[in-house]
Image (cartoon, rainbow, N blue to C red):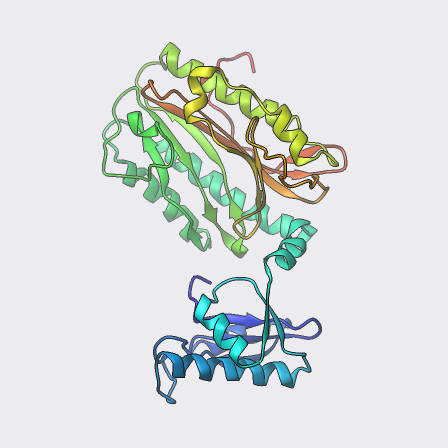
Length: 351
């Protein structure tokens, strides 16, 4: 789905018309949701198997005229809502061919917001794979391992268990855990380091498993500062999870979100809750102090799946702690979909 050559036209009624990479048309055989498969035409350069030739504007016109012919065949009034994978010039070509182009993101948002039982089952399989990967990575964590080596175990597990791809490579150690969003490098983990990871794993059936954990590399016990960071991140995570109730507005969630001490504000995450499905999805709900007066007035609904993120680090400190849980909004509150435990040596034994 990363290729902009491959796309589907989904009518309001009936099966989809799939424009497939030449030679891959057979991959849709037996799918009851697909009515027709066509070899895709490139909009920029000649596509494999496309013998009509032409590049640039000529290729765009050919492509747009084919879309028009498909729309007329299914009785559409030449209106198309674009979700993604169509660039500005392709949209202009559709307009020049008589197609009214509309934004499709809101339509897709509405369709994807409430998950079916089948979707929850698919997502749970991906989460099981991600948690297996975290267990294997945690088991091999020792001084001298590189960040890339640790990350490779996560990616390998996903591939071995039928997963699709990794959306990021967010694994860092020691001082590279602060600030966040530093991807895996060739740095070797040292004794006493914190190692933080965010799976961002698109597993089997295409559903995302987005789990974050932070580990301590022995030998020895974590320092008092490492335990302080971890406890604060754990408190932040569970405070914000406990706010989740159906009918709660996004503005209220932001207003009541966990308030970090001042020393951690410069590194705090703006986004605290975010939707999850085939990948990261709507909504993105910000933390305390970030909600705009004209921000979204939507509310949590049963059937939504989201992630709750926590990150604690000081701009004057060395390390940071990243934690994240994936959950389903229920009629009573929420149900955790992730089961991977937290670290006793970092948290303490009172939980």
